[in-house]
Amino acid sequence: MSTTTAAPQVKETTKAVDFKTIIDIKDMDLYYGTYHALKKVNLTIPEKAVTAFIGPSGCGKSTLLRTLNRMNDMIPNTRIEGLVDIAGTDIYSNEVDVETLRKKVGMVFQQANPFPKSIYDNVAYGPRLHGTTNKAQLDEIVEQSLKQAALWNEVKDFLKRSAFSLSGGQQQRLCIARALAVNPEILLMDEATSALDPISTLKIEELTQELKSKYTIVMVTHNMHQAARISDQTVFFLNGEVVEFDQTDKLFSNPSDKRTEDYITGRFG
Image 1 (cartoon, rainbow, N blue to C red):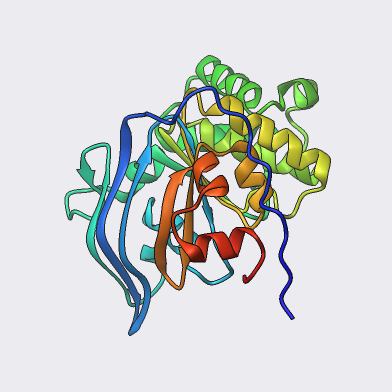
Image 2 (spheres, rainbow, N blue to C red):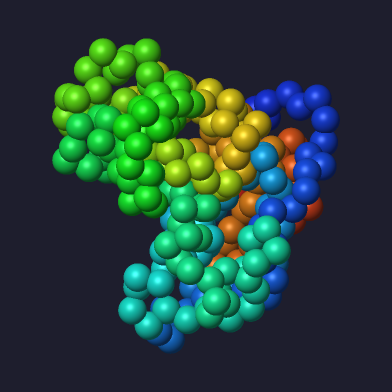
């Protein structure tokens, strides 16, 4: 017997989302071998806003997220058709340098994955990789990135300690600082709070709201209440297809597709 639940409470908004598009996906299909994982995806994602991907497990949310920085390239027999355009560039063009793309489009994963290095060296890793060797510059980047990740005041006195000495929530914010250190334009977050306690989750949600003034944030979440709280736009996926995407307040309060309504009210998924 199915049960229904009230739709998540949506944050109050003062204006409609009316941002410039930074990601434009047109008629995109993705295959893992013969498996058709994403089907004719058409989607626009606004600049300097939070876009949430929601939907049941295995519906294609994380697959699409990984498409945006070509992480799926690492999976054998992956094939993509259609257009994935970021800031005017077809990112699957042969002329695109994948390392440069991943500098522009950073990613934070479900499980915090700090390197087995010091707190300082975790954040400095990316800038060093891209050619920054000046100590004063690195010091400034590390401090600024940790401040942006709301971690500086907690770690500034022991930057040489192992990253593994931090709590789980601190490690996840360190991974955010590491992603921000190379000055990306877009930050992808794949279930970035699902392994964290409520207090750490709240800190990262608050951080996400602060970061969107400078970065475009695209997040996968199984937590519809989280999507309702912090996203400007929400995309609902089902069976590898985008069923609906709209401003978050509209999608949760007045969805245009019955399948979306059924999902957000708990009738399935």
